[in-house]
Length: 109
Length: 119
Image 1 (cartoon, rainbow over the protein chains, first blue to last red):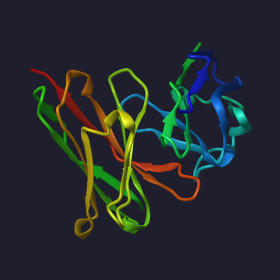
Image 2: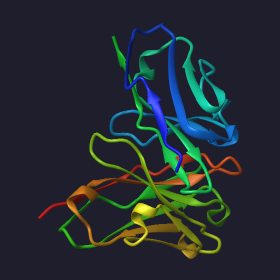
Image 3: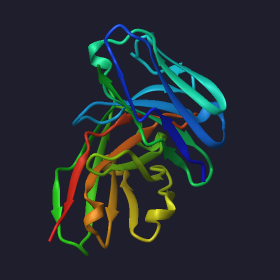
Image 4: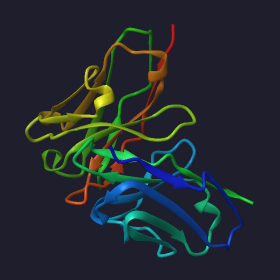
């Protein structure tokens, strides 16, 4: 079973700063099957990035994804107040199916 | 536009079963797999399984293999997730999520259904 480990657990930054979130897999993941989601309190997750680097419809270009193999990164180039939330990476594999990382909380410093 | 509308909150006793519905609109219901994901209070996301609305075929996460049943009714574009033998640690928000295509991401989510298991 592929385990996704996200770091840091909590990231404290100020609006306007750059955020770099990491997602490391216990074994190689196809880049095609790596996604990132944003979740705000009381809301369902929202798809940000799929295929490791493709922005979902309507997602601002300050969000970008990169990486391959076992190391993937979500970068938010310049934080806006609405970007403070929890972020999850997700991978798809044949077994056991989809798995999520434990999440990174991005909080206002 | 794509919408997934889930049934309302439930309170169940330990040992009971719960059935959550997810009504889809704005796309061809049988065209994309539907997944179920849950989130315990203050915790992360946990994938439970999927159903192919076209064939009714399913795949469940091993953790839920013996307790979950996913079904669908194509006549009303609705998917269902039933979880049996409920325990207190099944208390969570349960989401349905539509798989988008060949890269398998979840592009649309339901609003979530809170299931509380308490004696």
